[in-house]
Image (cartoon, rainbow, N blue to C red; front, side, top):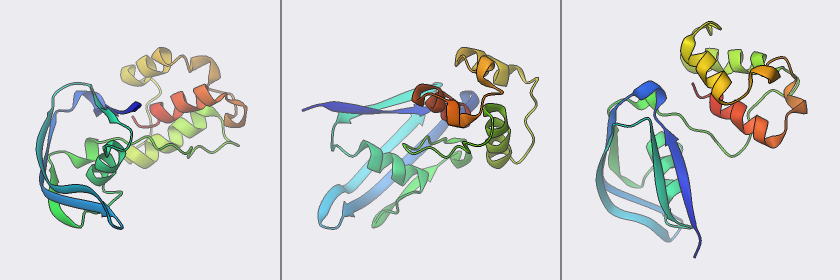
Length: 155
């Protein structure tokens, strides 16, 4: 049986707690979680959730993010606005440049304009090796470059 993982990045060294109480979730008649109870304390920059395929990693993350709704139970998150989610499908505007997409998604997620001189932003740009692509239209990006841009857009 192969195993998979979900990579969870905690934004800007944010520490948070997630409490799951008596969570029930099923897809039609397939029970995924029954009376699940857990307390998670995130005090690192990133977390890797690992388990075999079909174990419920993506379902749990979608429940935590509010993409799915449990049939019963409660999920409490101390800082819900600090959870970032990178979907499998791209949400880039391919007719725009890389920097235009970055500015657009920053404005959407943060409700303010991006400061291009921000040290954290520039560190991410350099770490992801995107600086040379900033004026390139997204339609011309490789799939790896696209994923890097999508990852960056979470911050």
